[in-house]
Length: 346
Image (cartoon, rainbow, N blue to C red; front, side):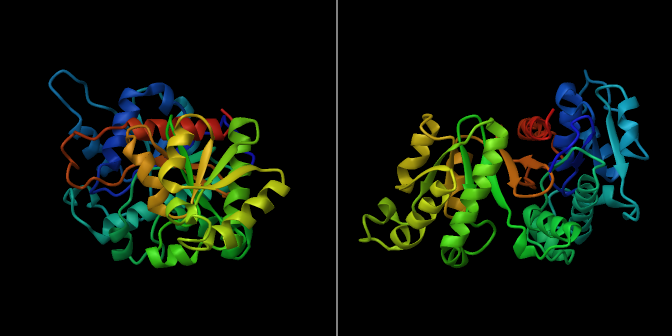
């Protein structure tokens, strides 16, 4: 989807009981270049509480400014936190305890994402960057989606007027050393194994090739991980590589993709990290995310591929155990803002 990089970027505040609001406040305080032209979506009281968590004896308070529309952002100075409050949010959200699952928190987090997604789909913002939400809080609020990716897919499909199945999306996790794209996302291990089908792998390769071509300005070098140990060892440890993954790679190559594999999962990420490949397509969630997160979550970015909008997020969760302590690290959120701006054309 073509976007106007001059438009503002919406940052959803995440679950109010987690570190999301603090990372948002830290980013706006400490990274004025990354947050220029950005604003937060959520609850003013929660974000003021987050800003208060950052205070020390030698620092001035971070001004939290209520805005009426995204257009107001251009008139504000750096190192303030513009907040577009959601209509209808409960009045006492700032009193929710840190580190506890609450349906009210899950509902606010989801509503913030829905507002930002609809603004992006309507061309009112250039991108959205989502602070972490809590999946159990979403479920407690009755939200019928396990996470951001599925919620955004549903919003985009409804906007386009197409069935959900006609808008496949994929998760990419990236840092400065490694990129991975996943065939399946938030499903059980059994369902993940069942999802390794030729159509799913082919679709993942197509989405990866399209998205990385736009990002890099050239066709990416794609490595495909096998499902089984040693990539099946010629059928000795399973036939998914021979029957599913190899034909999918061949189809992707016929379409012009620079795709190779399948490679042994225990070495392919190391090869990509050394520069042999631009991205690794992994067969399931943990296969792809453990290597990236092991390298450090501070600069990891989650990007949803296949959507008609730009969406990025930090590579960490709500961290209920340190929420409210002022120990949150905004590095991953700042990287997500920078990636969103790059993807939006800025």
